[in-house]
Image (tube, rainbow, N blue to C red; front, side):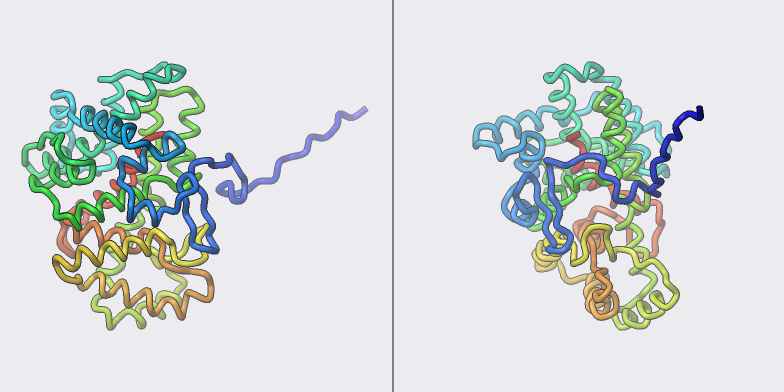
Length: 359
């Protein structure tokens, strides 16, 4: 008697349409441009909340009381400073190395300074979450300055999360508009259901690895150009297009060649990414202090032209289309157009900073 034949599961490249888990943290409606964190729209959170309050919401499942938020904010401020040997470690890294690799290496080292291997201990896990959320901006800012031959700047406990990050980068406080747009960027990049870095983090966490190892896995995944690095590619694309008057001819040629148009299209969103809409709105407040940069004018024109060419196919701007420009205007890329591309990887760090807390 022949043994029964076992059925072979159908192969799905990239796990397309294969549900791995159901998120209780966020919800996406790609046809109605809706993204929610714990039932609250991200547009509302970006305009009215703060990164600290939104982080509590994501971690705990509900908005904090006034006392809970004040206590959480204070705990984060107490966990910002790095051990002095961590700074020495950052000094030893190659100055022209990729910032995401520096971040991944330093998070792994941070886990050695503050071991958190017993993941069944909720108090230990919470301590790790606080340290990761609070100290990642310090790590990023320190490496940014050290690689330029400048001294790392100690965090300030009198500034909120976004303002302190800006201060540690540039040794000056941000204007209210820049502080708000940076805070909103951190909120908008904080969560997006089962994206690649979240999936990687969950796989690593399923082995009972430490919270620091989990975040290292997520950072490594985020570093890829098909995930967190997309906004770098958008800026390079815009650089190549030139003035806004070239937008239509360039787009028509790109479509004819079936070239990839960075910052457009999304697996889920079939309309304009709601995060891109909020970023544009907040960016206008920054431009009121400076001026509308030519790169932004080009992006707006490219979106207008694309609406008639790509819109009928359900292809619209995603969050990466405008985020790089916003960071550049806020001062974060610290790189003039057509300069050394080694500075571009800093753009993807916002996603790493915002998504530091494991689900």
